[in-house]
Length: 422
Ligand code: UD1
Image 1 (cartoon, rainbow, N blue to C red):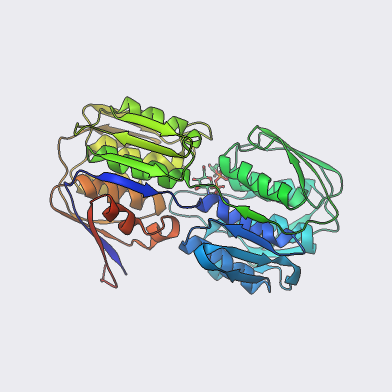
Image 2 (image 1 turned 45 degrees about the vertical axis):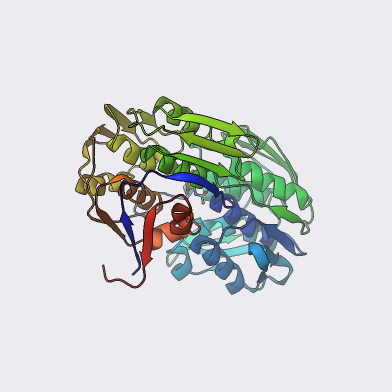
């Protein structure tokens, strides 16, 4: 298994480009199942999760062509086998995003039930009850969700909890349902808005995306279109924290700073000078040590759970004591124990971590446990004295495009050691 070998202590400086958003690319690829003509998607990041979704679509008989610059064409007109097998779903929970489109378009879907995962239980009950409200019959057989429906019927669905992929699944299913669907307590994440933009370009009638009430008027059919995925706000935030944690100065271009309000506010609170333009954001820490910042994760536009681990790394070298409260997932503190191996002083009480910043961390071998946890360990490695080897980095390849090349562009000493034993 590959590992990342980091020599810490270099102040980062320079500019990187944000890639397209993983969490928008995955539902938009799945939306290709809804159309009977090809959907061409641009700005798709080159990531393992994207490859998994492409493979999943291919197994269903859907034609997928990957062109230059990761333009992906999905030809849903050729769908033959509405099955998402266990061996793919187990590697990527977001595979559940094919359930709604398959059911709406094909009338039947067999999707492996995602199991538990490293960051918690992560059920899909709201996806299922929402589709049932639209007239689907759903059972679980041999570990698979088996869903059947004639044409789905519009319904009013009130989500118990704000769920991002749940909102996306139901929104996609509703585009081909008969009549109007109203999703209440919908997720407001920019990726939901991006998916709605793509669906509308395909001929759907979705309004209200970005608010907590989304209204979808079902159509008889959808066609393909050309659509560019929005920039990745979590990748952007991660590079800005890389600048801040090393006392450096980093600018991220081709991004959307307006999707990062909560993150930028915390970087300012940590003592960084933050500047933004229409499509860029920068931090300058002027060589200073960050000030500790409290974090409480919340659905968008609150502070994203996908940035919690990166701020834990920042707080572990900050001046002061920080409290981090994780409200979205029940087991998302695995990185904290690894940060301790680098010398972080922290304690965990349930969903809260209390971090006493220390002036310096010292490099050590650490193990990545999930995607954002690995980003946190890389950030800590950038500032730790000496060498940090981050093992099991296949997690980071799921969600960060060429992370080591981009960090090197900013002056970091980081390289991938292929095939090293862990
Ligand atoms: C998405 C993102 C992930 C991010 C998360 C929260 C994608 C591909 N992934 O994941 O990066 O960390 O949003 O912003 O976009 N829940 C239920 N029942 C359900 C569905 C969810 O109880 O049927 C709960 C979950 O256990 C969790 C909360 O709702 O506590 C939010 O989860 P959800 O928004 O669904 O996360 P994902 O869509 O899986």
